[in-house]
Image (cartoon, rainbow, N blue to C red; front, side, top):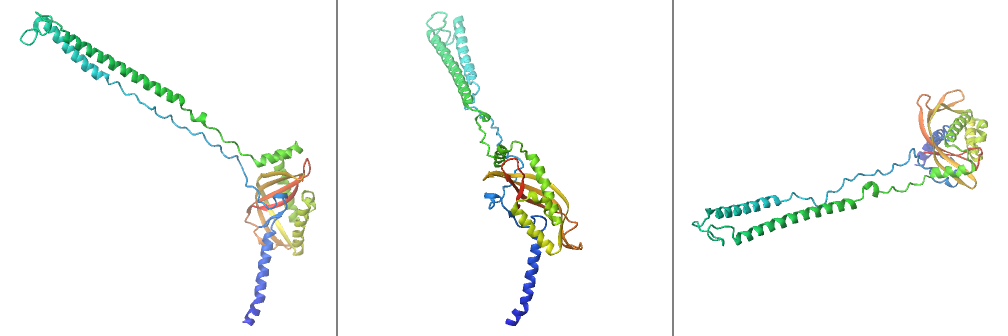
Length: 323
């Protein structure tokens, strides 16, 4: 058993060394590339950069609610039927009385009223007609009162209903951390412009990648913090020692967006999301490709943080975080 362990131990060490070498090669592709994050973001160094906000969140739409139906739907007055029936009864009685008064009376031709002789309208008929007329009057009056009450109730209900567009109140707008941070920066630099800053980030990005590929930080010395210069120089020294060149070609920056802006301890900080694609491969000094691809471009998103003393001073790269 011990002989088998001793036999496979050198193979295990070789495999481990090879895997570490591959990880090291991938981790140091392009300046600040790979899976690592480096540098300092002040007090925010141990927190992930904020997600990009390309546009403000949509406000809640005002919903349309159709008006509610009235509480009471007035029905067509039913008095027509009763008025017709009452009118028919009254007409029949009146006709009968007229016929009697003209000598065509019933009951064997003898008048039933108190008028004697030829007959006529008696007291009973008069009271009956008066009662019918009074009932018709009361019915019509009650129908009109109900109709006016229902109309008043409907108008009162509609007047108390508040339209949804008037009763709805827009929720207070959320505080934009980027805008508040940029406003603080402008207090010490009135000429600060976000668009010009994005252009500056693109220029610095190309300048730093060029210095990295040339394995010489002289052209990017003034736009790096002391910490970032030490980190990059350590990686470049490793490339020089291994006689390797990390080649970056066809770099295209597709988007630069400010995602965080703040001040602390007299320093301005801005973190920007950089979305780009490029050809990223490593060769030896003779040109033989060791890793990466010379034909397949890669896309990447990284957060680059720049800092400066508050005011109109030079921005320097202080951190790179992987998205």
